Amino acid sequence: MPLPFRTAAVGSTNPAKVDAVRRSLARLSHECALEAVDVPSGVGMMPLGEAETREGALARARAALERTTAEVGFGLEGGAILDGDRAWLTAHVVAVTRDGRIGEAAWGRMLLPRVAAERLRAGE
Figure (cartoon, rainbow, N blue to C red):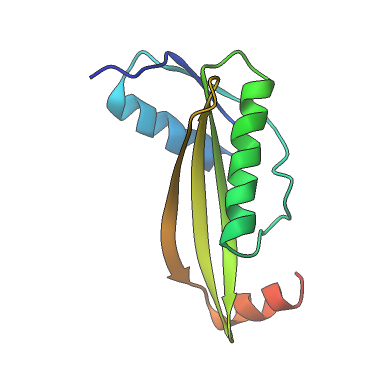
């Protein structure tokens, strides 16, 4: 089944994020052109909590559309969730189309080492 779009943009130049989108699109269609654009997430270097992580992904997807002529913009954002003395790694992916449709996915949580939790609490 062909994709409903032929051009896409990802709101990042981070090689891991660009490759993730490129590989995902390639599994669905080899006819989709992908452009990577450096855009701000509008959130901190390590967003804290699900809401802030989602906000960063949504901002990246929308900014990717604004700065390109792509039909769909993708935003990927990793973040952390502080829970007591523990910290969890999480991630969100958002796709936004020019007609305003939004698709979202969230990655499950992965427990981070205690030293990472301590550094996040210290604001590092």
